[in-house]
Amino acid sequence: MDIDGLNETLWTDDPAVGLRASLALHRLAERVEASHVASARSRGWSWQQIGDALGVTRQSVHAKYNKEAS
Amino acid sequence: MTTESVVPEVLHPWTIYMRASEEARRRGDRRIGTDHVLLALLEDASIELVLGVSRQQARRAIESLDREALSALGIGSGADAPPLSTRPVPTRPTIRAVMNRDRLRMTPAAKRVLESAVKPLRRKTQVTAQQVLAQILSLQSPDPAAVLLGALDVNTSEVRRNVDVITPDS
Picture 1 (cartoon, each protein chain N blue to C red):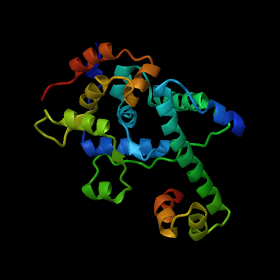
Picture 2 (cartoon, one colour):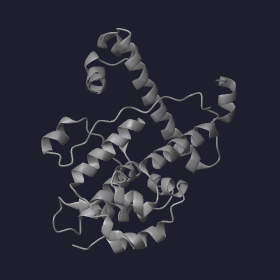
Picture 3 (spheres, chains in turn blue, brown):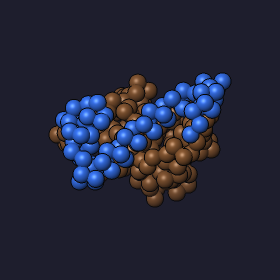
Picture 4 (spheres, each protein chain N blue to C red):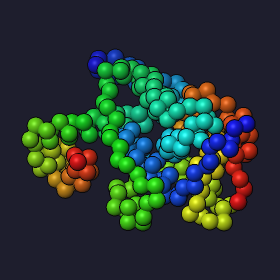
């Protein structure tokens, strides 16, 4: 992704699209996190390591993602 | 009309809440919006019939709305991650089943939709998907459910008349 290009185009004059895009970014971030937590787990990362990488406690990543492992 | 063939299923409002919650989670949302309530209602075959769209179509439409919005920011389709997995929802959830899940909050609009669907009913624990849909149909853009229905080319005023026919006022 071209970061300079992103700065220039990080603007749309339609607030309906812009606000939707803001939510879409949140969703994308959640999905990226979830899929990489899963891949970290499958590579043998501990919940502690994942928590450290995300800047949260081991307990909170575990509580959020452990249910999906089953 | 062949409305007799599809008997509206009576649901507990919690069932709709939990189904909507799974839709929100699947999408990566931290809040249950009216769009997720609409997706939850589409689990009911009678809703697919009355709207003329399947849940898969609606999910695809919601994805392309997001992609469209992201590309307006210059974020290409390369930035994509799969939706999260959903978990099964019991048809008659117990209070314990609801409490044991990670509970996502509803947006004010989603809350209003469920509350106003249940309000006129004598039994607040029994609601049909049609009664909830009737509330969703009156929403206007930029409400996410209204935007989704627009993207699906659903004629809301026409559907509203059909829903009135099906919904027996209890």
